[in-house]
Amino acid sequence: MPDRPRGTVILDLDGTLVDSAPDLADTLDLFLATMNLPPLGLEATRQRIGHGIHHLVAEGLAAQGVTLDPVSLSGAVDGFLKIYAGRLSAKTRPYEGAADALASLRLTGWRLVVCTNKLEASARGILQDLGLMWAFALIAGPDTFGVAKPDPAHLLRTLPEDRPPSYPVVMVSDSTIDVDAARAARIPVIAVTWGYSRIAAADMGADRVAGSFGAIPGMVEELAGTVSAA
Image (cartoon, rainbow, N blue to C red; front, side, top):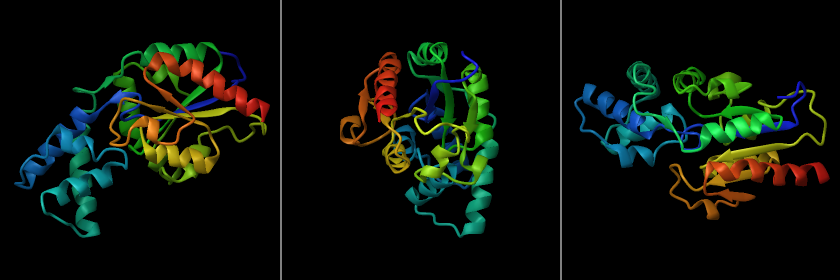
């Protein structure tokens, strides 16, 4: 990769780069069991991923008829995270073609970052376990900068402060949360057809829709050209 990157590609983690739903679902069910509550299961958990662990735990409890005050919910999140720390990548795997696409983007001079609503330490642990940390210049969770998607500041804080006005940036995600954040940040965005969204990728209002990881490098080049020409 050149010393000066051509631009930055921002990738979401859960449902975009890796399929983490099985480990999140197992962790949530194990956590619910500590409270003598029935399991939620994989599909119900999958529908609640994307807003961060705090939201996932709150929604998981609410699905079982439990609402906690803020202090108790914070303790519940801590309990969830203790379980999750031991199984970050027990079943989590990269999506097909992810490693090759990352290598292609790096080889052609792109700076890659992960911007996720998962805590930074958890995201780093997964990427290290899966052998993908080599690709990324930065991993940004909601605790990294004290801001979370859909706030566009979460995306913008991942970019070099000294970037020129024409610096190309492209977002890649499976989520309407990220499409909204990218739109607010005036960053072109690629929606992927896999992942956890209940809204079809074609209906998210993204600039491009990718049906495979292999299509993403070419789409990044197309969108970067529109930014450079603007």
